[in-house]
Amino acid sequence: MSDSELTFTGERLHADDALFGVDLLRHRAAYREAIRIARTSKARDILEMGSGTGYGTIELARALHRVVAIDRVAPRDHGRGSQARFLRADLEAMPIRNESFDLVVSFQVIEHLSDPRAYYLDALARPLREDGMALVTTPNRSNSDGENPFHVHEYDADELRRLLETRFESVEILGVSARGEALRFHEERLRRIRRIVRIDPFGLRRRIPRALVEWLFARFAVHVRRGIAAEDGPPEVRLEDFPIEEAHPGSLDLFAVCRRPARSART
Image 1 (cartoon, rainbow, N blue to C red):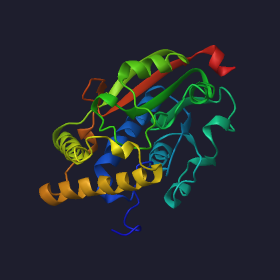
Image 2: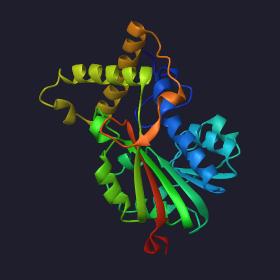
Image 3: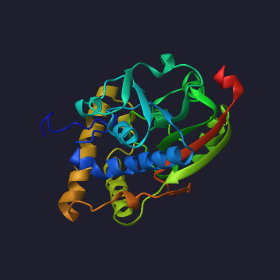
Image 4: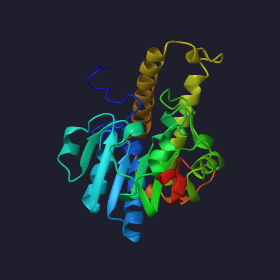
């Protein structure tokens, strides 16, 4: 496998990673729900915190009025051609005015942070107007393989709710679920990962250099998905196979809807 074939690192997904199409659909389901919520609440000004390569930002910008996206890396070329405005900046020093957005979207970011209380939670709340909302997704620890080295800390539903309630008066925890072929793919992926992990019963992978762990993780992730495709064929999965519903232990991701930012967080 050449480096040119391997665009997946575990830190970000790219829209042109065909092998990770199921993973992209899982995250796109969250963006579709964000669009529905924005339209229902009549949100006009949307901020995305941690937009990554920009594939989700494009979907937001196609459907909604005004979208501003922030990340420490630049979007890929197709993102620059969208109606969204991309800003390259760290979340801890966002060049954004307080109380200037109706909706903040931050998907698959919080698990990468060692201490979200340091700046991330305030960054979620401060840009919001008084009646604004923040949407946060993160892997559900109860149904995660726990092997992604870029995930500093994963959350269960209660822990995530308690954390977000320090900055918002109302926090509803939903979940991104899977059904049909999507669920079968997820279960097979977990089975194969656990089979690989059994090779290392003493957890030596936790002690080797970080760069090597990341390299191995990316290659095993590709190996697992190629193995599933080779044995079962490419999974036929649709957006509808990832419903957003009340969170439960089998949810793939948690989807937090945060309302009424605390006054102290916006000053």
